[in-house]
Length: 248
Length: 309
Image 1 (cartoon, rainbow over the protein chains, first blue to last red):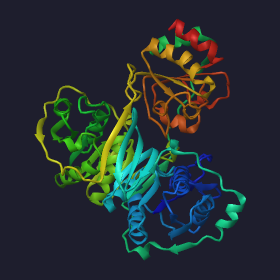
Image 2 (image 1 turned 90 degrees about the vertical axis):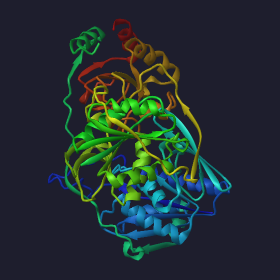
Image 3 (image 1 turned 30 degrees about the vertical axis):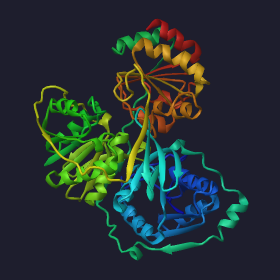
Image 4 (image 1 turned 45 degrees about the vertical axis):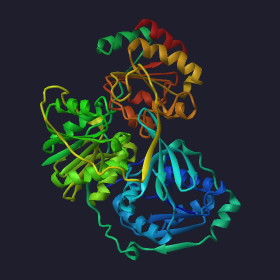
């Protein structure tokens, strides 16, 4: 079976985002960009399923600018077999991405789509669920463990207060949580090999879906800054202070 | 505007997360609540008492017992024919269901709102809370998830809403529930605890975490949290995690012990009323947000604090 893995190029998770002074967004000029960390986990999980003989081919796909090629090359270097770049300089919302992905699913007929649960830029946490809805497939969100068994997949999900296991008929959409796996680093030989792996270039128009944005960002601002309080000398002073503010 | 609020519950008790969503919804218009479950009549009665709720729709069906998104979303989508906005708490249940509803309605969801600016404009955190975006939706219907700590809780008593039964579409045949492991504890849940004692990587081991953090939490009747570093190091289970990728909390008092204060952790607790930090590194970023800081070795200071509070 085929696995489709959508990946997104985002600000590197180690970089502290800076809000532009004109309030139009976050400054991404000359900032290190990387694959969304949850998507790395998706790629890794797909590779592990392939290594376990559960899948034959992994297709990485990204909707984004020309430079998202680099993100796809990373996925290929990790072990994806081929890539599709749907090139656009416009910001595409999760609903638009889900619509493009649904068209790619129609063409490629994967049995499983593994998405990151959210991207660390817009923090929307929507694309996987929306894709599942558009396709009429089951969804296993916030996956902690997945196990494929014939025509179904068991997904152990991280939920508030614990874990929940659901069984989905394949095809299905899974979204990954942090503890699903530890993504591998691509080795140098694999990075070299990835350069020769096929990458199709498409545009949203090729898929004929309406991806015009529904949300307008009016401003982006710094969050309110919390002022540091005072340091106390010892535990007695701490207890006194806690009593003074009525905390205990 | 007529709103539909997804009630968070476990088929027996309504969860507090619902009350903040009711407040957000009441800023948009008339509030109607939806209880989806099985054997959940008592939850419907609790929701009917919430101040400001006009009607409670109860969908009581074995197929809805575990609130699987595949079964719940079509029901919500059909109810949205007569409502203008769907609001769910930004819990794992809400985050699982709402985007599926949004796609069925061809609506772009507004996730994790912090405020209602007008009936189509909202603020929400992006980049792990490092920026706050004000966004305006052009969709005719709104689908929204609400960050619970950003809104006051509606009064749980005082309302007397009408309760109406609704029927779902039954089993989707796409998914089924297998099992659930919910940590059973006498402790208050993190998202509703008044005091949280939270431990970081400096604790060094799960034994030390238990030995140092638990007695203080017991004494204060507090919930126990942890930083992602402590969770990743295996000191405590994942559901203890406070932060952008874990739980977002805002208790009266948050006591951070041996937590350096990484951005992603701060994003999860910076709305707490009083933040206390105990850390031996005086330059730890946690002190920049703490109201009360104590630079000390936690292995001495915390047992002493436990004794003296």
